[in-house]
Image (tube, rainbow, N blue to C red; front, side, top):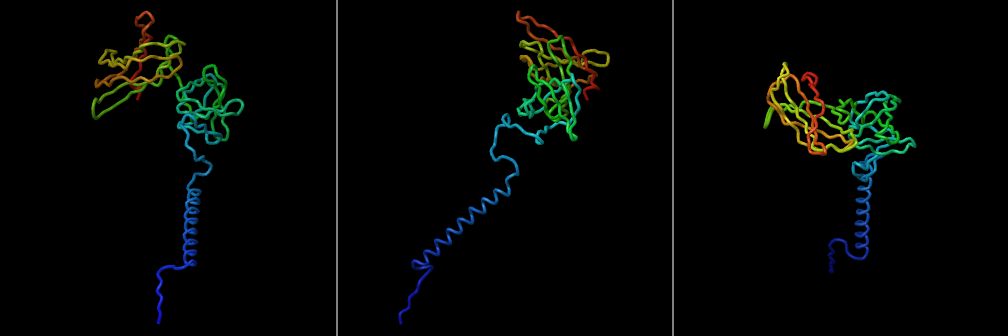
Length: 250
């Protein structure tokens, strides 16, 4: 008696069946991956990644990180984050952080506040109020604006104490060189208890420049902010001193 033993799939029919099985499996795997991508992909969001400075948000997505605050014509607002702004022709552009907007109009539409204004002498633009922060600087000698002065307190770790931080903006139209901020810590009788400086820096026209002084460990009741800069002939020019009570900085 002749007995024939075969293993697996033998012959042309077996090979054809094996090929069909493998082909169907590959198709199913590709289809499953495609549908998984469709399910996980955010609706309405492009799949391409763009640098932050090139991302322009449109329409209802134009929202920023700050609370909505109404503004009056003639007030000023600082752009707190890269903002989407609508031009008069309804085209959208990006506004860089720390630009100053001169407000001309503010409207509430469906519970959303939209602010229209100009940056310097540019064309009017409309920005959602959540991209803006109120800007009320102290103007010193019509040269420099001092704003957002606050305390920087570190109680533990290396170099504990209280420093002073804030922003400067040059409105003179020309660069102010070697600008130096000194904060004099004073007691209730206006006597000096300590003095701390920030790093010297240049102030280009129209640019918001931050400053931060070294920390002091002394107790104080107020600070006197003194700002000086270098003149073209190499001398030092002092701007008016600004005295701020500690209670107003908390």
